[in-house]
Image 1: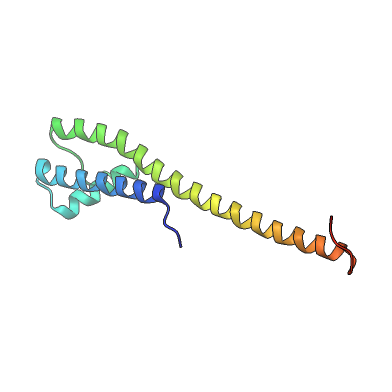
Image 2: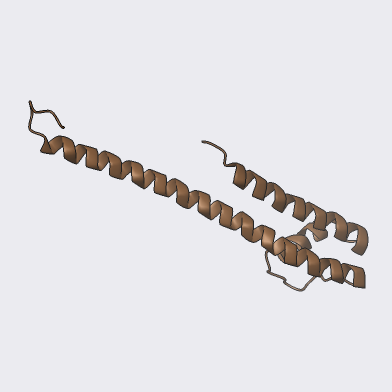
Length: 116
């Protein structure tokens, strides 16, 4: 299976954002790595349970900017995966239609005659 460069880039960008948020909240809020990763994940996926929240003004500003940029990254990742899936499905169906039409053409040509 060929690896799509767009998916790899989008996935790397998403992981980079999650790691950045995790390290920031660990340092700024004093949360554990697990809580920081959890908060970063629920923030970027827009779930937002509300059990954790930033307490300093700096963290609140960071979270606002992090959410605006991060949601865009997550949507880019989702869109890239969906576009790749649809493109592969389109290629598969085009191949099926080509073979189907080829088979139909071969059945229409009487034996002993050549196709022009």
